[in-house]
Length: 523
Ligand code: GLN
Image (cartoon, rainbow, N blue to C red; front, side, top):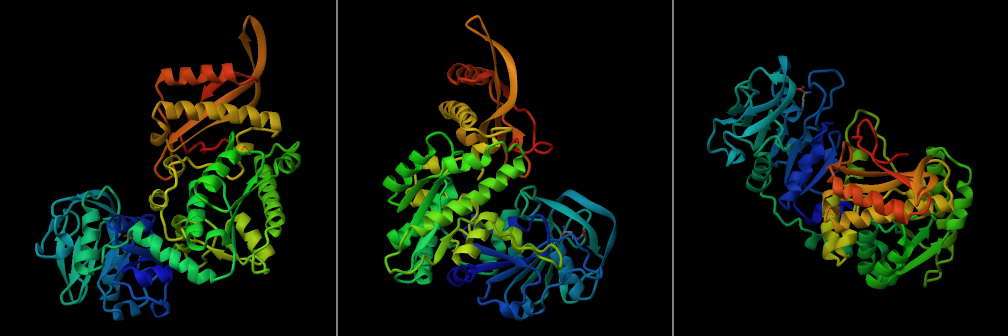
């Protein structure tokens, strides 16, 4: 897939040396409609089937002079395209051209002011005197052969360097992080003004290219199957498949008995009736709930749900008979770029490729070929694509929902009545959040049912019922998160509605733990 996209769109190649920020370089460029793609720094240039318009060498945790430090394939210079080295990337350029890199006296971490020496340099147009972010322990202690200084900072006489005659640049700071106030502009300057990359990476263009690619890949008769969950990714992927091959794409929703309130009906209505996706809904609730009986351990619950899903999916898929009389050939998966990045990112000699547990099993057992139309996209791009494909706004902006569903939001044993309590409370909570206009300000919100009883009083009667815990978080990447600061009146309203409207609940609490140390989900 990547190859196809890079053949159609001008591409900036980001070679990843393991920095935690590498993927941000790609993101920033895409924000300017420039297609960028990340590959590990060990990529052999001769094995690329496309030619990049320019190459960026990322930062990295290693020191270029160490034994075993990663180095770039020298063929990158034979491409004859502009090169930009960022931090480790610049040290790598210096190492190759005269080994002028050593440990500095002290680490430099934090802000610095950029002082541009070469005012004509296209890289720095609009960036002079801005704040830039430093994060390094090694430094250049001389100019590499053939290079000149183009920028300095108080601490770095070699804050920016460029080759005297070739289009090769190095910068000590990190333009990809938002702490570098004009870093985005610098990256755009490199891609557009130096590499002359076209700014044509838009979701409108992507739809056309991708539909064509799917048609070529699947051919005129083969058929494709995919699971939908009611979430953004599987809906967008399914709609795209439907646009490409119509009814030869089969979507399957497995109702596992731990979906949200009315979810199966909602998916049928929106995806089937509304979006015209060829959808089959299978009610396997009983099967799942029977297998979950007596199980309290969260990991066991997850395993049971994953394995039962594979089993049910295979059985139900076998009932779908393609028109050409052959077997279904492809499996659709809504993999996004961050998962791809995680699997290709340079983390040392042994790279592990992660396949989603469920999909891995299905591919092997059913002898299916994988098709992943969202593989190149970040989440915000998928959402934009969803809007363009006419998927309802509410669905496009839906909070994420875990695969094991409400089973991990009912703490302890999962029974039908416990699931019903949790999903009703959750429904009320989300409804109130939407009414208050807060849904889009929150990254994820849900209710969970705790396996403890507590004393209450209702209508002069003593009650002894369970506790609902509400969670709502703010986050940009789900790696760290903070709890959402609701107004007290809001919490009061939700608590009162839940206790009044949901039988079996006597008390409501609000979770005020951040991640870390807590996780987003309770199990
Ligand atoms: N490890 C190198 C240093 O400490 C590069 C750091 C980086 O790329 N952020 O200087």
